[in-house]
Image 1 (tube, rainbow over the protein chains, first blue to last red):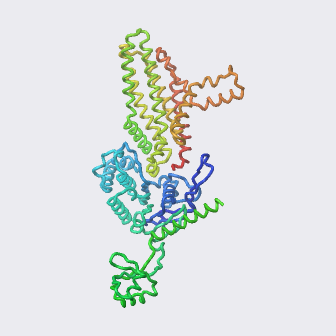
Image 2: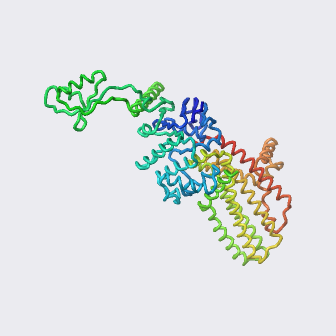
Image 3: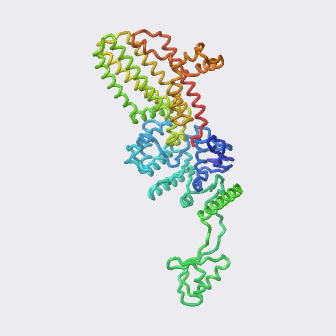
Length: 320
Length: 258
């Protein structure tokens, strides 16, 4: 059975705090998860949840307090494994005295490409991220969005099997975001494993095969975006048009919400036919009937709210 | 090896683009001024002044660059987060460190060679010819370069675990202490207790001994330097740099980059 592309087991990270570094703040707690090969995995969580900490641990930028992790079946301490990994740091910053082409050429040297191969790859990547005309400008003159694009180019420069992107949409305008989304989809189509962190839920919903939600340093849920929020229908929504001219319609309109020229009415699955009969009798024109499912955003907000409530409770009990 | 070379070349490129080599203009002006004014003094001492002034300037400028650029070699990369993308490449942390060291040594080698050329041109201007006695000046320049290499390694070590300001203080402190090694080993005439004297003797062997690298007086007076001192100093500098870089690698390989 092939090993997962990314695997972590009880990965924990404490940061020392205070003047003498005697106190500790737990940033990540016992993270155990798997990302299969060829999967697009979205790592979701609010700011400071532990997303970047996890990615930095995977990339060897920081070291775990306890626990282990493997990428492509090899421990994260194995530097040679980095030949098969591409990484985009959060809010990337590069040597600003170099041009984008020079930076990519410099990074390409670590993969033992020949001079001609480097030149070809650099040109290809600059074109891919829309910087072919800005390739000879020093990075100190680049905007945040342009740096993000350079960051993406250097992450996929060597055609890695696993691509890890920390907040890839950050700092990008709508066009840039669309382009990054297209690149991620392209990588997915090529069979690459893509792990990216984000707090933009629509990106995760549209791009990911699987998502992991992390809040307060703890993994709160992992699975398919629709699976994670639960497939159970929360009821039915009826959209209709009606005139408030008679007693029957007045009664039903009191229970409905007005949105534009239409009304929406939420009812349970069992009472949908009863409600439709009632609307028919009131002379309403039915526009649509659909299932109501929780969105990833609702699920996410529920978890974040729960975590904050817990933190507040701990704070209150500490103060007692 | 190619990874180390790549990091070294990039470090050299950074120094050049950050206009580190602009100091050469200052040195050239100093040598031109010295050559013109010294020519009006006694013929006997003109070469002594040129050599002393030139070697002092080569040493001071080299050391300033070594300290102020050296202490930022690693800490600046961590602060600016330029290291994140690099650490994710197939490059070991020690390879990065050796590359950074090599890049700054290369920068200062170019700088020292250029300044030495300026010094010999000034000497040629005042003396009209160069003789065998001037070989000692060349050796003195080489010793300054070795001294600079040791200072770079120390600055790099401190750059791995502390702030730039503290790294400057530590490096300069060690450099100054290294100029008084023999005094530390001979404290018999002092009022210090035997235990303290022993402590200083031990410490003196750990500190970089820069006294052996100073042949400025011999160079200024055209006196020969024993050949054994050349290879002894070369071996000493190489060994010291390797030990300090090993220590730096141990420290840096365990460091969380935040």
